[in-house]
Image 1 (tube, rainbow, N blue to C red):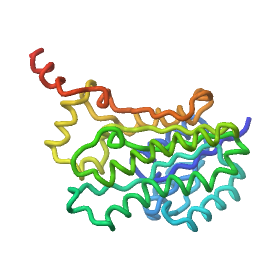
Image 2 (image 1 turned 60 degrees about the vertical axis):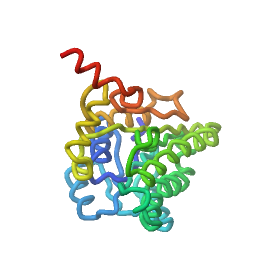
Image 3 (image 1 turned 45 degrees about the vertical axis):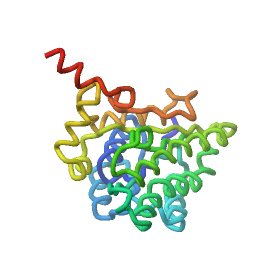
Length: 253
């Protein structure tokens, strides 16, 4: 049986780390990619069957070197999870061009660069790409002029990749998490904002990192063998809800 290899960016923590652990539980070997070398090495050291490669996904030369390292070590790549991302939440009139480019460089350029770099290997393995966008790419919100736009672009880039790569048997899909209970979310969202999210989520809670990982690993697996070009919102129904949910809940007592 062929040992499948997944490469996960932004893997030192959060959704990326949870996804790594789930891949391992499903019999894959995993390459952890992150630019925080200390945290990356610490995470990998606890996870047999992983390879840690320090890489800033926004730098083309580092991405090329990363892919070369992966192929030299494992000889193949079966899945790429483009999870690395940064968030700068500011009003439009306070978002300068440096902030805009910082967000775009990782969230959008990184997806393009990593996908293009692994493409020859994925053509050989007839593998899969899963891009991590966000509910902010579907629903506009305050303070997200750069972040939300970058994630909307990732959703469309997913479709572009899918139609070009289908003839090679390479599937490309996208997961758009809604609110997720992570350290980053707790750092950038006030308790009032978190409660406001809950008020608009039919399932009434944030996702766990494991909830998102389950969707990612499924889309990389053979079980999703006829799914490509799709965006899956793992959001507890948040994108489907309108303005009446809090009132409905209040009426129920």
